[in-house]
Amino acid sequence: MSLPQKDIGPHYLEEKEEVLVEKINTRKKELNGQLLLLSHHYQQESVYRFADMTGDSLKLAKHAAGAKDRNYIVFCGVHFMAESADILTSEKQVVMLPDLRAGCPMADMATLDEVQWAWEELSNVIPIGSLIPVTYVNSSARIKAFVGKNHGSVCTSSNAERVLTWALDKGEKVFFFPDEHLGRNSASALGIKDEEVVLWDRGKPLGGNPPDKIKQAKILLWNGYCTVHMQFSADHVQMWRNKDPEIKIIVHPECRHEVVAGADIYGSTETIINTISSSPPGSHWAVGTEINLVNRLNNQHPDKEIHSLSPFQCLCSTMYRIKPGYLLWILDNLVEGKVENQITVDPETAEFARISLDRMLKI
Ligand code: SF4
Figure 1 (tube, rainbow, N blue to C red):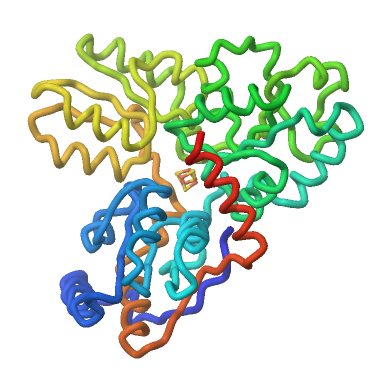
Figure 2 (cartoon, rainbow, N blue to C red):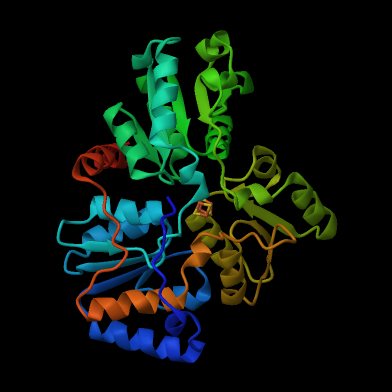
């Protein structure tokens, strides 16, 4: 969700970089013992360097939950990530997002109203008890809560295949939100036939499908997508194959199926980092994920050739909204005892969202 952001003024936004760095480091020292600064891997370097902990969204949220002595959690990521941190942390801990406009377009593609409407429509076509909802962790707290209430589970890009297997054991069909591509790539890896995977076109009656097609389906895929990973294409894969016979292609499963199918390896952000980090010196890589992470890997491994799979800058523009000026503004206020940009999930939503997250952890 992208929310309106307070104007913080030129004092923060036009400040010189070296001044911002010095002030942020000073504020961090002043808040020592109370503050936990988290940064997602896709965050730009000018913000990432201040993090106490870096990682993917769930790892960071779990870390915040474990750091019970830190009352102030500043999450340099996007809105759904801060929500997950709020769900998992204690009441005493306050979670903040430096710029409220940092939403996730993919998470916004599945609203609770749309999903409830689809669920109701489906209940007229199939026995609804046989349908298990699964949501990617990149979704709003309200969608996670809906899934928790309806006996489903959250999944991540590393365990989506395991969670789909669990869901298909439990019911006859799965409704997968919000990322079509993670759902399709996971279904394909499990050997589910193409004709058993149906796309739910949000906004169309029955998702644009005849009732018979839905009755025969095993997996219904909500047609959401990541605006970053959709920029990689099969042509980019071919371009690298033609250009460099030594190239290894590694991509995130939020990419289209033809990109994942053409790659040598696919996997979560952590898989991409670990695979490249442990590869031999001199390896050549083309990487299909967000550009800040690709550039960081390139800087960290000068002994390897690391390129973006796309010739264009595939940037998460909403995460890019988090800038050092906003971070300093949050910290300045905290030093004065004022909390800005707090992200809260109401208790009922949090309770059911926690159920869907706990279910995933048990699978
Ligand atoms: S990279 Fe994609 S899924 Fe991640 S926050 Fe940006 S738009 Fe959302």
